[in-house]
Image 1 (cartoon, helix red, strand yellow):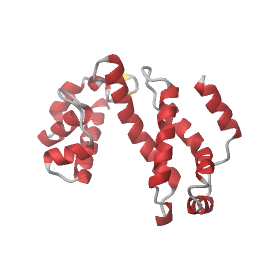
Image 2: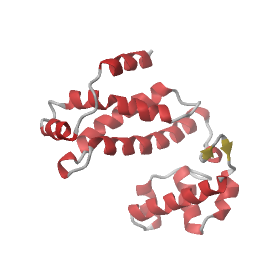
Image 3: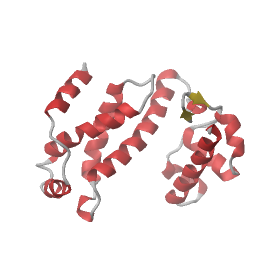
Length: 184
């Protein structure tokens, strides 16, 4: 089983890198890539465990997380003063949430749009909750999560709507906050 091998790797992996160690190792790329992967493997597994989804096995999240880790090493901006672990964690959460939706859509033949917002084991009917949103917020949520049509990335949405990616992301975040407030 893959998870057993990962747990063995975790037991023998190095501790998280200090800021100075990150700068030093990223200055030695590509030869230090293995050491950076080993130092951040725990973070990948930790974030994967937080993605509770009965339809997707932990092994799937960890496998995908390792690919994200490798991509983040190539695109990180440690030399500009950003901590790699913060960048990696944000990338993992974003990717895992998209991966979970795509996996469910491909493997079960359904879009999990009615179970996107989950809090305290109460599931809200998304279709009713969307009525609370402004028209632009509703359009962005529907397109992003593929409700009634194929899902789009933020980049695709920005092209489709003629808005900047940052603005589309902020509108989406605001809409999600509104929807989550309904749960309280």
